[in-house]
Amino acid sequence: MENLVNKIESLLFYQVEPMKIKKMAEILEVDEENINQSIQELEKNLENRGVKLIKNDDVISLTTSPENSDIIEKIKKEEQDKELSKAALETLSIILYRGPIKRSVIDYIRGVNSQFSLRSLLIKGLIEKEQSKDDERAFVYKPSIDLLSYMGISKIEELPEYKEVNEDINIFIESERENDK
Figure 1 (cartoon, rainbow, N blue to C red):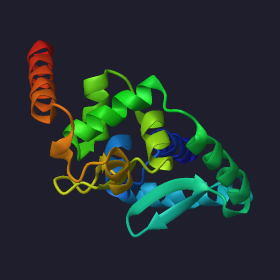
Figure 2 (spheres, rainbow, N blue to C red; figure 1 turned 45 degrees about the vertical axis):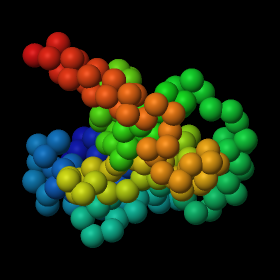
Figure 3 (cartoon, rainbow, N blue to C red; figure 1 turned 30 degrees about the horizontal axis):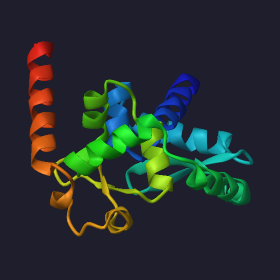
């Protein structure tokens, strides 16, 4: 049981996003009852710690403890004031020209994990995250209204060379899929 508790904690930490218990059970190859028991154990283990579990129906997530909100707010402010990294700009460009888009597709296009770039863009309010209409277990990322306003555009199609860039991305994805076969 302790090993399963550790695996759940690692999975939630790595995922950074809320996860359905059913999906967690599939990944860890155990039944949902064992997952629920282990979640209760993990919740006890995290008491009086810097992180805690949030459970909403069949979705679970790791979050920072409310007692530390002042520290988190300070870090958020510092991150908001920082310039975007090359990786964040790359991720933002993909979201602008292909959004709404799943993290897995962003990772596929970039060839690397985009978790930290997405986090930075979310904190800065440049993108939004919402549940995918196609797959309720996944989230999609899209440009925020504030970003469009800042850029002086009212719709995505007004981006420079929108059609051409979108077509180039489609060609790239298709060629990469062909190469993977």
